[in-house]
Length: 120
Image (tube, rainbow, N blue to C red):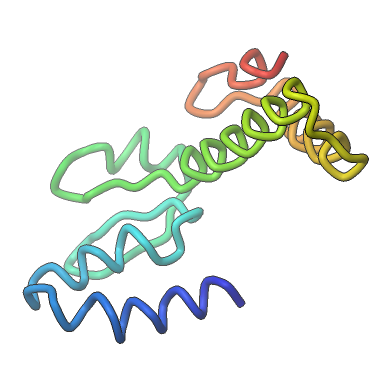
């Protein structure tokens, strides 16, 4: 629902002020932001991280690794929650959220990066 509202606001409040050539590029980076994708033959194609790494890791494809973006989003939420807890602002929901995010990335590697080691 939030994503839909964001798209509607962008259409009304942002895109009318942008040059026409920029609108599709902005949409590429702001819509389906957690999906891995490339641009091939002027069309957006959803692909795996492995395909990005092995086949499309060239500027001509505008590779976009949504999996890393999703991790960054989760990790920043984790850090924010941990910071609040350390500052004495806590709740059962906040504690559970940090545990759930940490659990999601146990022994997880993204692009061969051991991201699970970032969670302490």
